[in-house]
Length: 440
Image (cartoon, rainbow, N blue to C red; front, side):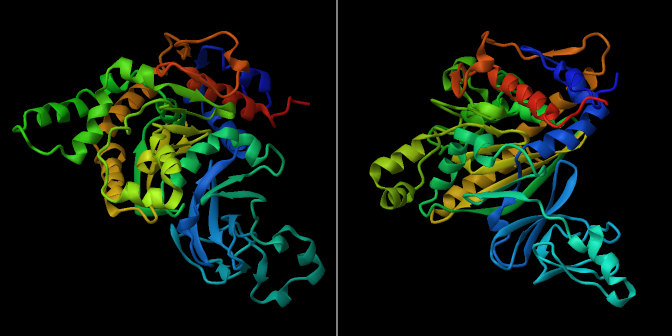
């Protein structure tokens, strides 16, 4: 069966407590995700601190679309499709850099302002002026119309028409607010580079995993559990290493995760760690609380630091950890290939020890050379292969399902509920079919 121009068939892949395996293994579904889902939603592009000066640029993808995030001459952040309107060549090939006042295509030297406008064409007299004026190429590099810089986090929506940024994210923006407010100066900067890790699985498996609290004590027992057992054998009085502080919560019992709670927002967004989280018991950093109290006042500073959310999923494909200042992007490459980027941030005005903790967490948990991350990767690979089995067609996400939950907004549920997964898959069906048309 073909899913193209068949919104009813696509919607039927998501049931109240099940999703069809084609969401993960069907190439046509993947192509439709690139065409509809990643065009209809607000997708993370990058952080404004990556392009601090006019002419600075960073290349990335939104779904399968190559784009450039660039600081324009008026100091605003713009997002351009990375394609020359002449012959289709990708204009910017470097991951990042400074292009000066214009981009120059490496093929025929057409040049464009940093807002995409056509600047010059070599031997322009060889083109009929009226014909050139009326052709598509005269419009320059296509600019994405809908771009939002929210407290330094840059998002875009590829489709010209659709839901507003504010309507799409709603109350979920409170996680970004908390992460930024953890800086005494209310500012973040990308620091420590980026860790990239190729996963042999569908991108939604990684998104699903971020609020799966019934797997850590099982999948990570061999890694985090071993680290904790080695630490327990250390001589009495040995200072507890930062790494052990970060490893230990991964093997907390089910009861710990049940009590954490999960918040389910609209449009596929949600987070674990409402009342507690794996980041709540880290050692204090000298000088940090004092800096926060000076900046925000005692009551406000304590309220900011007491909000220790675990994983916040921003649908469709990023996860933010505010208390540890990390962000992961799950970039779809194919139905069975996902590139994971793990970014770390500096809290401007905070002690360097906090950045050290952030970088250590990223290396231990999210790096290609990490310990914990490989546990998940093995499970993803097994799932990707197992879903090709003809024995079963559906994936169960029914844990603690409550009839009518689909109509409730911004609710808090048991920390081992799969309600947030169900929320994501409902959003997937909605945004997949929002612009899909029935055949004529």
